[in-house]
Length: 534
Image: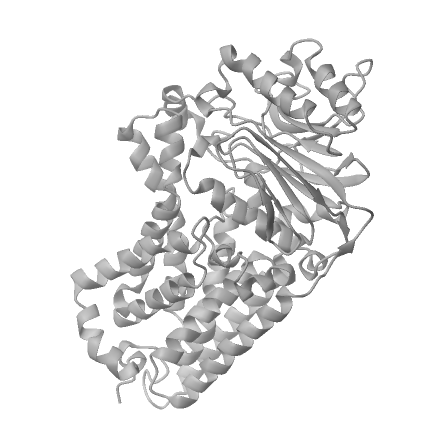
């Protein structure tokens, strides 16, 4: 196999062929994520990308940037849906803004390869260990820089029913799954394109051990049942985004959600993010009472997504309120969860002097929320402790640990109507699956248009409503308690700290070996070495 590959190396090095293949590999990455879920594709694509960078080492940084830019643009094309199709921004602005975020995110993989170029190690150690470690550190930085954007991480491609690598999520979180995916891809490169049988054997054994460990971990349960199962009902109003904040459509919106609440007797009922489009303080008198009392008569604890004015009366919060114990004589006494991790440009305005003119062109109300604060307590609902997060927050597992420790259920309230029928809702559902695995609890998701679903602690979708329809998803879920290893570690930081130390030691080791080497450049991973030339 490696002899055949070496014969074709000259073809791949032709600039037009090289960048065409690189682009096609990048454009194939969305197929590895939901809704397609071809999880096996990601190690192959990433491995092929790594091999291409070996063929043209002087262009590795540019290649990494191009691969990431094209890949992220393909994965996140739903940004254009939100800006143009839903918000009405002209294509003159929508198309450049769509590719702007991927262009920024691609800086992280490019930086990874810039750092990687400075290592002086044998190929098997550089490709087999250093590159996966650096890539994982780069994805962690991408998730944290500025407000962070972790969508498209390698690990999310493995959060599906049949991937053994998903078993690493409750151990070290999504970044450990990304690390395992990068290892698998790079070890495949060493297995397929290698003239040294000992390195091939080592890569083979490592791959088998990695997959076996993941498969074993998938069968383990790190949390345990608490109490009896409870019934839940998740309302999906299917209110078009273009009508959601139209005053003329308010009555229709409230009527639809009221009918959904009135026709279920589930113990816990959850409405989506901003299901009530008006500010809580501006609702018609008696509306909240009508919803709360109807739910209480049916034996339901009701949670509703609604924007809320903060105490200053000017700033506002994206919130979910708990009406389980609501009483009209004390209308302001209820639990509230306010979104803390906001969407840049969607829920707050960075650089308002520059971005404000664009908002005037778009139908995007409520674009400047205030943070709700960390460490908010779970809701008391039907004997369960329900830890809520709102939409975008579901992409940040570390931030959910504190409330999950006190919770028996996880709940996500979202409005994905901004993204139409694009892949965004399915990619977001895949993130909820990752959170359920990491935290060892059922995740219940109430969304406006989809994907409304229930996810088990093993990350499996146990029930799901048909998207883009008005529906109520009803099912039984089990409260859980206890902590996964990921929770006990407090999140991703211990893993990232360990990888950072390892990366530093390997850098020092390579530099030290270089200074004592008697053969100049013998330890540097060059094009000649990687192609197994004598």
